[in-house]
Amino acid sequence: MPQYTDHLWSAGFLAQFHHSFLIRDPAKVLTSLQRSYQKAGGRESFTRNEIGVDAQRRLFDLLWEGDGAAPAVIDSDDLLEDPVNMVETYCTTIGTPFTPEALSWEPGDRGEVLWYDKDASVWHEALKNSDGLKPQSRKPVELERLPAEAQELYYAFLPHYRHLHKYRLRPLDRNG
Image 1 (cartoon, rainbow, N blue to C red):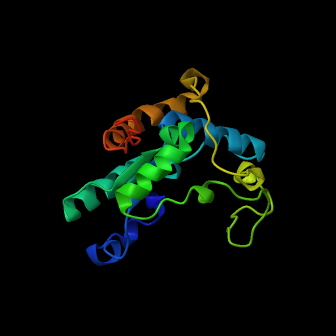
Image 2 (cartoon, rainbow, N blue to C red):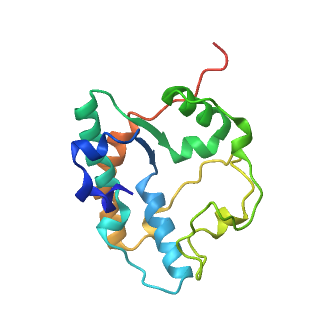
């Protein structure tokens, strides 16, 4: 969520980290936000800053310009479609051992996870109840079901998402 850290983006600060990007189609982000706000009984609209795709792009470009290499990018649809292969690809890319056991866990509230919404439990309930990363088919989004202002945000963010999407990791070729 780089939109909340952009005031810290000095070369010295950014050099302290190894950066990776998890991207998601803005239509899916907007749909998810709308659904979550409605479940929580809150507002139905959100601000441009809450989406953050443009901030991801700015940070990605800044890091690439500084390092001379594109940071690792994973598209959430690729990850969900083939979690084992994508996580192995990611680990290979960043030079860390792949541990298949890390893709499953016991469901429930855990002390090592900081849940920002302990009271409402809207944002993270599905994750709390999950037991691992399992393959999921891609789900299309009906953009026309979003409010007009959300559709405008989608078209504003789409070029930034597409830019990042061009650099996403591709699954390892297990046949070659």
